[in-house]
Length: 372
Image 1 (cartoon, rainbow, N blue to C red):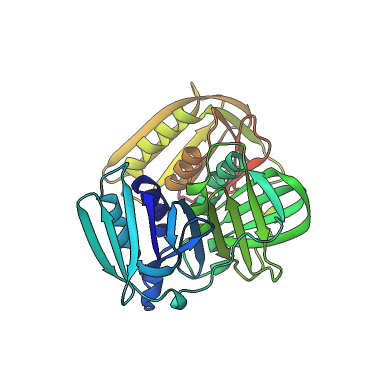
Image 2 (image 1 turned 120 degrees about the vertical axis):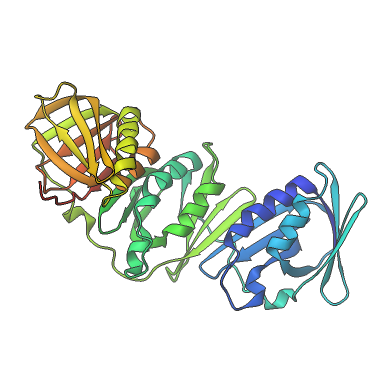
């Protein structure tokens, strides 16, 4: 193998694929990135067996070949080379990669490319396509609500339900539910899969804020999903199991609504959480027309107390409800909207948060029972 590529292109590619490199595997080759010449360029691939990322780097190929080398070491070396310069890569004896740029020279010991796991590529016709900016926003609004505790593996994933020209994404742990529906570009038969939230988080990081589509390919065996955009493939395993019927938990009615400015509410909750963090992280929302502003956020603990008044347009009954502050901060931080509508049905029923002007998103937060 002998080729040359531009430093900034190689550095960008390594930074992208390195997110899929295994950090805890006992299999040495999974700590490596696969370098393979293909279609007149350099194909970079990394995997942890749950997610695999492939990135194509344009280059000038003299001799085809392949090798795997430690991903972190190679990335650090390439980042340290002069920018806007050509980097020459050559595979030498005993799986050694020779790296040369200007007056800098490095050799890295590698592992035979044949030991690297096979990663599917986007060779099949897409199941459907979604605009990159639409999918990225949807992922950002949903994936944070997935569970991180492996006690219930199905909840560490995001339900993706395809139905005609719509894709509904849903994530839940024991305390909240996030649901977002977006349009797909190609109609598809109804089907549901569960994708690891970690995989979708990495996908969100490589998607761009553009209208260009990302191809979505479901494997025939329904055990993998592949996302393809120009120059990048991301493939993920799917999670087996039945995702809970979240629709049964979504409240069907409410007795109180409050329309509030997102930034004002977020600032008030963050201030309250500074006090609440020393006592179960509980903050209280008091909503009622008897309030001067309509909505009051408060927290009390041994270290002190906090109260903030937030302007709100209130309809219906007044009520007081307690939430874990972290869950409120999460939804208010991740959903880009000017205003939220909060729907409540008393202190013991879930609270519903909906961005004004977006009828395709809903977020449900379970209340916290308090002694007062």
